[in-house]
Image (cartoon, rainbow, N blue to C red):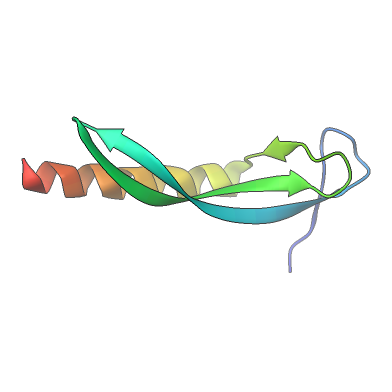
Length: 70
């Protein structure tokens, strides 16, 4: 497991979380998996490079799915 130290408090470790979120594109709503990290010390919520890339790919896949229906 790859542990990362919180860049805000520099005391805690960032724990990866995944949740379903509702998104919308061209008036169509759907749910995608979204990732973020939360510090186990200060409880700050952050999205690093890996989480941002994961979230962007999930959103792009949803957009492609919507465009196929249009």
